[in-house]
Image (cartoon, rainbow, N blue to C red; front, top):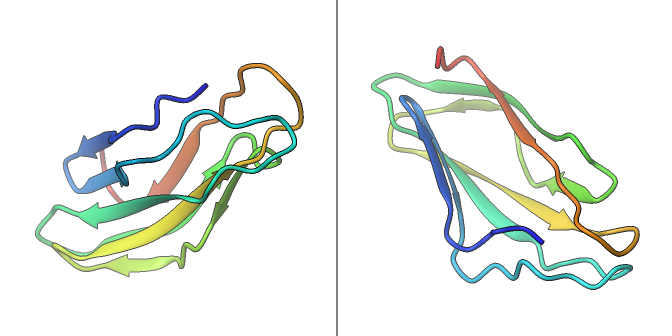
Length: 102
């Protein structure tokens, strides 16, 4: 089960936030709703994001992301859909590759 209710991760030039209302419980064999995330540039210059990937891409599917530069105060959306192959707890790390130093 994932704690997907209104989470945000911040570093100096990057913000990642999950839309409120995401449902963390999913029945095996049934995909969750696509959970919307937003990468926001918090710095003073463009943030270049080259990829958004899942460490468990078979069960945590990342979609909707377009690589490129995100201007200051702008954002780039992507979604993660949880599609478990069986019962039990599943985990994944979503990795955002960017030119942010921290």
